[in-house]
Image (cartoon, rainbow, N blue to C red):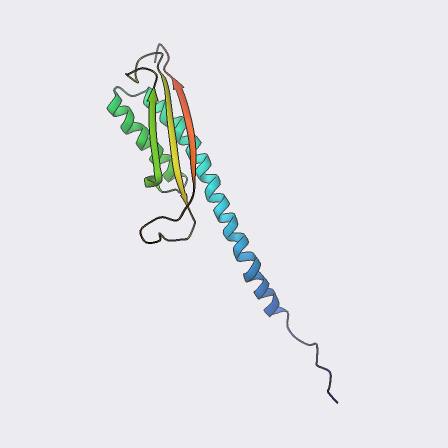
Length: 141
């Protein structure tokens, strides 16, 4: 006759196994969502501040340099790669510094997967966050 098997054991193995199977993907998902949220906030903040810096510049070349640098600094503040940004400036007048000029700055930030290295020289991009900032130069600015 076969003797019954004992039910004695340890739940430690099951808890560790379930922790690895469930917690690690959940934490990675939270990291990815946090990265996307940070990029969204960074794009909005960068577009707004870049439009204002264009308005306070003295000429078009300085305006473009300041806008690009502002976007890169904002991305770095949000722990994002400054080189993954692109900036486009449009002005209603040919000279972006004239009173009454409407300035539009479009910012794009590429978001890569967290904790994943580049694959064959290409970043593992999962999304691009876009934002547009506007500024009108007043008569007395």
